[in-house]
Length: 124
Image 1 (cartoon, one colour):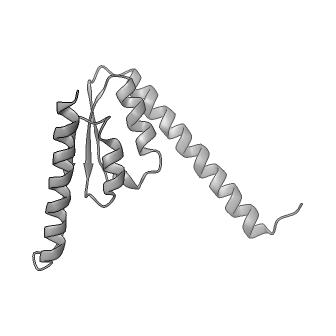
Image 2 (cartoon, one colour):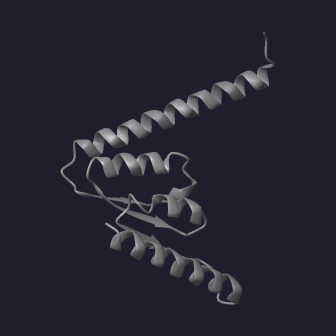
C-alpha cells in the first residue's frame, strides 16, 4: 500500500515524536534514578499538557521521590489523577481581576482540590 507523501511525512513525524518522547521519558527516569535528590519539582509551561505526565509521576513515586507539581489548574481531572502520587501542588491561577466569575471558579476548584488532598493524606 502506498501513501501520499504528505501522509507518509505526517506518519514519520508522529513516529519520530513518539520515539523522541519515549527516549526523553526514559532519560528523565534514568537521571532521577542516579540522583541523590529526594524531591522532584515538575513545572515549566503547563506540565498537565504532557500526555505522559501521569506515568512519569507514577514512576517517580515508585522510585520513592517526593513530587511537587505546578499547574495553572486547567486540567482538574488530571490533577485529581495525580493526587495519590504527589506530595503537593503549586497552583498558579492566572485571570484578570475583572473576570470575577473565573476567579470564583478557580477558588472553588482550589478548595475542592484541597479537600481531596486532605482526604488523601488522612487516609494514609
